[in-house]
Length: 126
Image: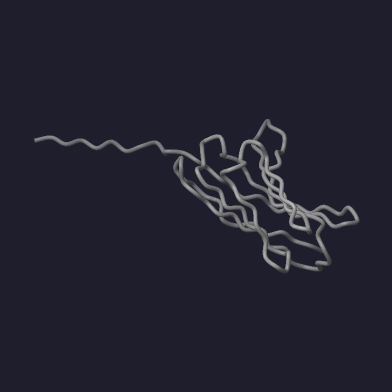
């Protein structure tokens, strides 16, 4: 049984960066690809980035130039470096991996929230 464990999500201000990590554990033979998808309620799951076993990389149109996918030499860990994050990048991000014989695995998802926050009132009076 293969498990994909994600980490690295959180809250960041617009223009900031986050790095997501996904590590596969269990009985691992080979993955034909590892990828990141994202989804929010009411929307279809969207491909963010994918890296094949041969190192071929594809990005979703909305993240190209801002996000970078990479993996370790053992091909069991994949990272997603996200730069210049914008509020529209707010989603649950899922790691995915597929074997050459068609088995697909998914992580539990990690929340990424891009927001200025609600602000805090500062009052200066004499």
